Length: 491
Image (cartoon, rainbow, N blue to C red):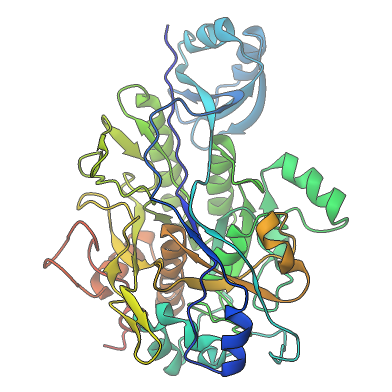
């Protein structure tokens, strides 16, 4: 038999080294524009080649439970069970050769056996420098603020004004520590002044063993979620920040780090599934996935069910799953990338699951030193779109304006090694940035409405969004761009 092939593409990461001059202090302007270099590339194309594998296999059982003799069946086929997701009837298996995989697939209890793939975070803009600030420039308190608009660099945050977060803050809606957002990503730097005290380390976990070993080698005694990249820290601080340097959508929301991608941006499919289920079982209110994947439905019918099972499980456990739409510029309605071609029957697990809130990106059209940012709700050129896929839009950034947030001091990316010297922030753009804006608004909804079924939070996100284009649902904005003030009942 021919084993199905997965094409997994993780949402593109857009990095910026071109600082947008802030509307705030001259000191801020000087520290953030010195030495800036920007390199622009065209948006990444959707790849059609076979994705890299871990060497293991993903096994889905016909029943949503793992049968008692399953491990023995795997051993008899020459493999070893690495992970069991009993709640959804899925397992990760290593050591199976081609014949062993076929033997296991022939078992009556098994629905599909497919290679476990590794997604990659492709880049379409790259940074040339890191913005740092001396400890004397910002009066670090190490505590959350009820006045996020007082953040040192808030003048640069067109993105939070675009979603009317400042209006929500003015009414006292800054989030609640009783609401938890799980950040499924490359980890979090919980020591950053903007994140100190915001991360529940007791509930944080890593599903990337290779990264765990490197963390202990480089930073003995550090928690395994230490972000050796930068991506997860930036995403986390966009959701919830102490607002010492830059504000987040909220300032009191509790975060948990769930590491599912390594320092290079590789995200094994088994780790992503493990993270979703763990976050759901940990009592998380909201799960943020600033990553995504695509595969051909016809070649991988079982994998569609795998993701539907995982997302449905999280929904039943009370977690709202919010995910990035992706940065390939693909029309998800037609599986088509304008100017490139059509990709047959793509399934986007972050957008094609009915219970997931799929987020596209917006960004400024231009910037003028006198008038500031113009057209902040312009659809981002890189963002995936599609009426059937997009729920809402949120700021993701553009060449005219990037989303700024904390940089990880643990980063081993050669471009961001300066993040370890003193508190630092980086400007990024991508749907990876749009998703946490929406997660932050969802956290405000939960803190305002109390414990709610995920469907009601999703409905509130839809109803409170600013309908910016065609009435109702449109391909670029879905139901509209999220509005934090309206989401908490201020309009």
